Amino acid sequence: MPVLRRFRRRLIVSGILAVSVFALGGCGRDEKAQPWDGDWTRRVEVPSNVAGRCIDETLHIDRGFWRLKAIVHATYSCTAPTLELVYEGVLGKVTITRNTPTLDADITVDTLTLAKVANISRGEHDYLGKDGVEQLSEVYLGKTVHAQMPISVAGETLAAPLFGPLWTVAYSDAPYLDTMTMYTRVPVKK
Image 1: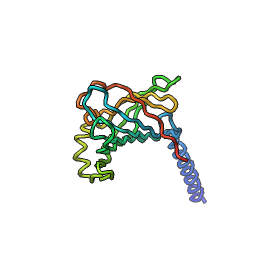
Image 2 (image 1 turned 30 degrees about the horizontal axis):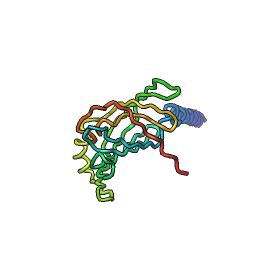
Image 3 (image 1 turned 120 degrees about the horizontal axis):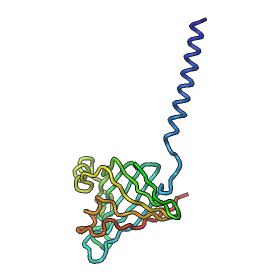
Image 4 (image 1 turned 180 degrees about the vertical axis):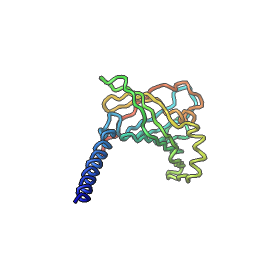
């Protein structure tokens, strides 16, 4: 009998401990969608009197996952897509500085990687292999492993400067490094 009682007690204590771990494990994770979550798109045109390339961007943020797809055009004219670069990272610290009428914040993106590179000049996506992406990571990402950027969200728009590593791709000169340009939210498909 004493062995059976001890076994029951251990079973009850183990059950309570397991339920507590599951309950506490869910407390630290915020499943609520944030105003910056979703898909955003913008075209970054070259300012007049600056040498550079047009870039079409699609930004995807979803509960901490961050992905930026950049279509780089051959020239400033936005008519000749040449290269697709896909950057990925994890949304780190978010500091909200103002919450009405716009949400202004500084976001940190950690563990940045250049995830994909594709030649799209012939109208098809010719993706490079893992070794090719690693070699081009030095050119298109450099030593950047995290980035901090200001954002401003107002309804269906999000403003942010051009992602730092894209400056060397887009412009030979960088006079507008902190200029905020607008993304628009991509409508959710039903």
